[in-house]
Image (tube, rainbow, N blue to C red; front, side):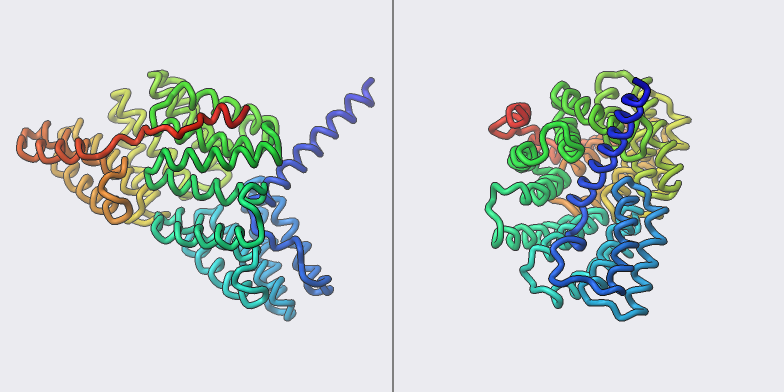
Length: 426
């Protein structure tokens, strides 16, 4: 009996590791598969280093992956390896930098890798499509959504030349498009893309796969933006159960799930549970990714929002100011996440009677968001509502009316796609 228990435990560990690796290869570009020729000894050394790094990256351990990828690139440059291996080193390093929140460095490496990749293969090779996915995700991390969409559309066009629309390999591209549409506020269109992707993902991976759980978590977040709380809660609970089985209960890769759950708890006025989730996320992310990672700033911003809603203004001030500082430092002042941190701090200052500072923050937030999105984006609406609150509190009636009129013109973003996600999952 003890022997069988030990064997079962080992099988579970191997199964989890395999699942993580599979999910990692779905997300990363296809640099390790389908090579045109057998690698030489020089190429093989680089490939081994990159393979080890990819295991760490799939588990979100970028600190351990970084020296391996950088060593592979140094070796590739020094030993005159094949161009195909060199471009794979560049692209893997781009993915690593993206995970670390170093988007400018990731952008530079990805563009270099892409140019070399197009030279090695041809401009419409499927490998190029996977690299374009990575480049698009880097642009999104920088808040360059208008640049991200044509890159992603080109990737999809390349894949359509060699694959049918209903092949499972197309699902990650559809998920990426859906993620971008959510960021741009096109919620109904995003849900439709998620539905199409989930139909393929379920066919290929099944409902209990780690990748499936990640997509369900994305849909749950979409539902919170649409205030579809019960549907969001059902999906995020499914996501958490699968992710915990693979990663364990306290892994930093659960952070997006905890953030969605915290949003749902706040909507239910369960502020204690929301704070518990956010504090757990903050602890593990600071420990694993560092205090200046963009994700740390996003968690702090969400925590500050919770404290403002709960009327805990002194705690909110510390947290909101930290969020602004971190996001300005990591993403820059002209990013949409930074703009929403400005808006949060402005809301706090209104409660504290610091109207001039609040006005300045609102103006900065609005200018940034209107340069990134259209005038009807939900984030623009949120800042306009803050400005209306400020103007009402400061008794500037004419300005209140102007802000209110702009908010009223913004269309509702709670449209629902024709087929519910639950039906697609079944």
